[in-house]
Image 1 (cartoon, helix red, strand yellow):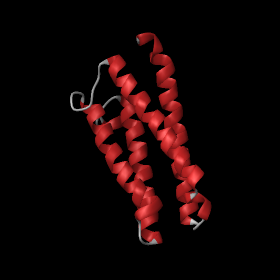
Image 2: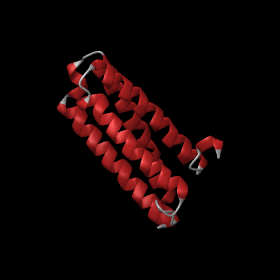
Image 3: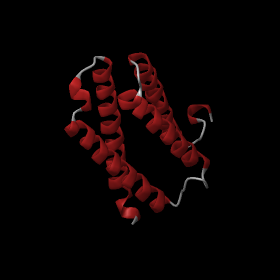
Image 4: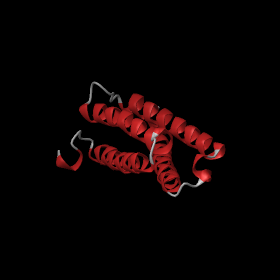
Length: 129
């Protein structure tokens, strides 16, 4: 299965880029009160992309034998992923006011960047580790 690692890693990185980009664009749309930001095709595309992203992450974890709750940097990524998802739902849907949605969107983008940093450095502290 190790021979699939480069392909799965590339798929994972591509899914991260597309998922993050789509979230960023939809957040901008929500900030402008654009109805397209919550259109069904974009929501479903987001679900599909995130499913591919999670599937690739699990496959990579199995291939390299590094697992959350065993390896600190992966534990940090999973924990921050939960935070990112919660912030994202408030940013795009559950935030009652424009201010709450915007603050949650900006916070989610910050968490996204932190997750990327942790992934890049394979350290729970990102570049600080």
